[in-house]
Amino acid sequence: MTDPKETVRREVLEASQAQIKSFNDGDAATLAETYLPDGTLNDHSSLSAEHSSVVGREKITQFWDGLIRQSSLSSPRGSPRAEVKDVKVMPLDEASCKLERSASLGSGDVVSKETWVKGKDGEWKVAEDNVTVVQSFAD
Image 1 (cartoon, rainbow, N blue to C red):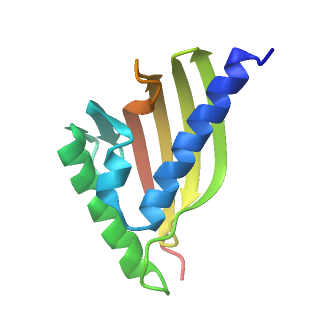
Image 2 (cartoon, one colour; image 1 turned 180 degrees about the vertical axis):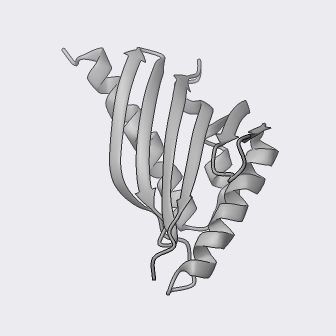
């Protein structure tokens, strides 16, 4: 018998890998489809004390499109490239999970702390994402 938490861990990790593939393909719209229709992305990257939040796939698409463009500009190949450095998948129950991931974007790092939920259709989607982009100032 398969451990339910291991099943959750495997399924969420697969969904998370699809996000990275979408980023590396430069496809912000497909990346945004991994969020709930009313999913929230909290951007903690700003230099000000306040962060910004976007709700809904359209706004999430715009956020990722901007980051993909920025990553492409700083890439020697001229295309986005996120390389996962660390990922932790922490199942809460059979229908919810926390995921923490850090990745290198070439121009800096991004840390994402996500809450995933499993829909009635069996698909995993991000309900909330807390993103911090740390810009690298080294040559």
